[in-house]
Image 1 (cartoon, rainbow, N blue to C red):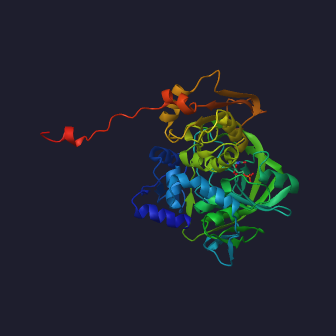
Image 2: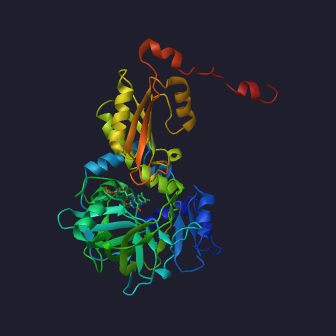
Length: 436
Ligand SMILES: Cc1cc2nc3c(=O)[nH]c(=O)nc-3n(C[C@H](O)[C@H](O)[C@H](O)COP(=O)(O)O)c2cc1C
């Protein structure tokens, strides 16, 4: 299903909020998206330009599962299978994303949002960046881009990403920044897989995908994308990028980042722009969810892992709640170590038993209150390299203290005092019926 078919489905199911009044791309759209979160919203009349803008499409796992017609618990196995059983998308010669070709583009003609007062500029946050290396082939990543002229943007490239490796190797390279991608492409682009794996093959394993040769760069792009911005990125031509409100809803600092020069824009005739609210639930879901299969796989190598939630309370990046089927006393500590190996940016890991609902923070806290002793069940790793997103990590080095909490109960007879007792069953009708 394409991006727009999904929007149509949301509309048919009465889930889409349609804003018919004119709304500005500067501050107003981001404010409305936040107020209406988690409801999907379409702005039919942006004040500044003629393209419609949509946001809050995938604010939680339930929305993502609904798109793929899966129960929520099947997301991790489905993503894991897609990463393992990759397959090449079909190449087509004509595509909707190229219905309009603009040879002399002007970024001011696009509905690029300015999200917060104090931001460094207008930001594209939903763009999937496709690049290519002669040895490794194509790669997909998300990179936020801040506009600073009618044809130039500063692209945030975190050190160590595959894109960073490509750019450092090549000095400059062709890229295609795709906005309004189908959800299989969004999910695949957010995965962190071995260098040399084209994430479009993961997207195709999630759901059949067509790709087309871009017009002016040698790259294959999703045929159903709404917009494709083609151009070049330069490792040594840099521009200030930021401030930007990131996943943690705190402000990221200003850095000098590579320049992306746009040479051609292609789009659908009536293209719809995708807004992705920085620090919003959708941003969090796309960051955190693809880490869950990697944590799941690593934990499963040492103990029986049942489910993983990289939860929004932990910014969908810094915390992981891991549910295990505990078989031996050391399983908790083994699971903690494996979880950190599966997501190196994670700061706090919580291991719980199968009777705890990992999607309910109250239950996780209950397990902490009743099954945890700080001197026995705490695992501390001091001064480890952590996430660049964590404002509490050491500035520059990102060194941080990582902690694992084993919130599991003991095994066998010793478990009895830790088991939650069920309230007596009752047939309420008997007591609440009129005249009863
Ligand atoms: C919505 C979203 C925005 C992101 N923004 C950036 C960014 O601006 N810069 C960056 O380097 N990584 C960003 N990331 C993270 C990378 O895209 C992501 O970790 C990617 O999977 C790394 O891929 P790689 O293994 O191919 O390097 C973002 C991820 C998401 C989901």
